[in-house]
Amino acid sequence: MNETIFALATPPGRGAIAVIRLSGPEVEPTLTALGAPRLPPRLASVRNLSHDGGHIDQALVLRFVAPHSYTGEDAAELHLHGGRAVVEAASQALIALGLRPAEPGEFTRRAFQNGRMDLAQAEAVADLIDAETAAQAKQALGQLDGRLSETYAGFRRDLLTALALVEAEIDFPDEEVPDNLARTAGPVLDRLAEDLRRAVATARRGERVRDGYRIVLIGETNAGKSSLFNALIAREAAIVTPIAGTTRDVLDAELVIGGYAVTLSDTAGLRESDDPVEAEGVRRARTRAEQADLRLWVRAPGDPEGAAGAYVRPGDLIVANKADLGVDEVEPGLEAVRVSTTNGEGLQALHDWIAARLARDLSGTDFPAVTRERHRLRLMEALAAVEAGRSALAVAPEMAGDDLRRAADSLARVTGAIGVEDILGQVFASFCIGK
Image 1 (cartoon, helix red, strand yellow):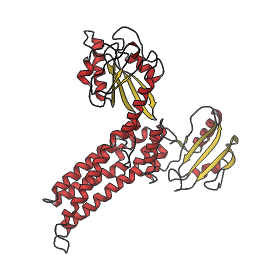
Image 2 (cartoon, one colour):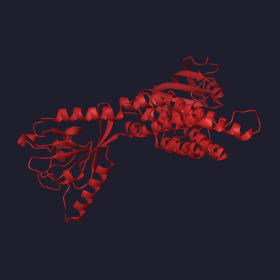
Image 3 (cartoon, one colour):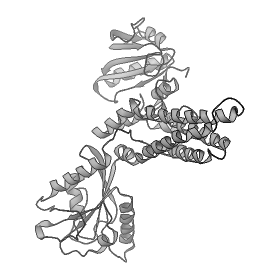
Image 4 (cartoon, helix red, strand yellow):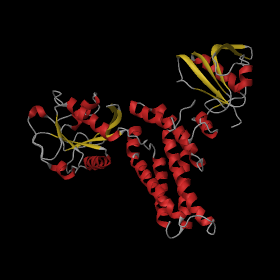
C-alpha cells in the first residue's frame, strides 16, 4: 500500500460536480504540486488547481490526515466542475505526478487493511452502494454500523470464555483449581450454540432482502400467467396469445413490492407435451417453482385441479384468474385471491397480499440478519465445532479444546480477523471504482 491512488468517485460523464478521491503517502506533495499546499485538514478550501503551467479548474479541495480518513491513510478529495475535459485534465495531471488509478474497491480494501472497518462492514459498503430498496439500505446500514460484527464478536467472546475454562483444567491439573472446571463451560457452550442456530436461521431473510425475494407464477396452459405477469410489473414484457403453450421459457422481471426487492418469474404452462421445446420449458418451470420463496398458482374458471393439486404446498397462494368470466371454486384449505387482468379486479388485493407476505417473511427482528453465504457457512462451521466440543467436554477436555479453537477460527474469518487473504480479491472485485 505504498502507492498513492486516485479515482473518480462520481458517475462518469457530464454533470454539475465531479469528485476525485486520492489516498496514500504522496497526497500532500501532490496537492502542493497542483497548487493547493498546506490545506487545513477536514475543511473545504477553494483553490485554483494547475499543473505544468496549465490551469485545470477552480476546485473545492478537502484534505484528511491519517489515520482520520476513510482509508486510514492521508487522503484528499478534489471537487471539480463536472465536464469531461476537466476530469480528464485532472486525471492526466495526477498520473504525471506518479499516482496510480485505483482498482475496484481499493479504497475500501485499504480501509479494511488499515483497521478502519472489518470485512463484514466492508461488504456492507458494497451492499449499500447496490441498494435499490429501503429494506436493502436499512440492512446494509445496520451492518456498516457494526451491529452484525458486534454480534459475531460476542459469539467469539463467549467461545473464548469457555475455551479458557477448558484449557485451565488441561494446563493446571495439579493446581488449586475447582474440580471439573471444564464442565462449567457446558452452559456457556449451550447458550452459544443456541445463538449460533438463531444466527444461521436469519440467513434466508438477510440474503432475500439483499438479493431479492423469488416469486414464481405457475399453473396450467392458458390460465393467464403471462397476462398476470405483465399486470404485476406494469409493462408488456411477456407475449400473450390465446394459443396454449405460448410461453416456453422462464421470463424474469425485477420489481419492488412493499419496499422489498422481488424477482418475479413467468413460466411455461404445466402439461404433458411431445414437443421437446415445450417439454423443456415445463421442466424449467417445475425447477424454478421448487426454488421459489413464494409460488402463485394461477388458475382460470373450469381448469381441473391438475398440476396445482399435485404440487401445491403450505404457503402457496392460489390466484383465481379471469374472475370476470366466472367464479372459480377453490379447494377447502387453500388460500386464494380472485383477480381479473381484463378489468383489474383483485389486482390491488393480490399486491397487498404479497406485500404482507414479504413483511412477514423479511421484516427484521432484534437479531441482526446474516446477509451473505460466506457468513452462513462460517457460522455453520463454528456451530458444528461448538457442538462437537460440548459433547467432548465430559470425556476428553483436550479434544474439546481443539474443537473450540476451530470454532473461534471460523468466527474470526467472518469479520476478517484472520485468514481471509484468499477471498479479498473476490470480495472487493464487486465494488465500483472510487469506493
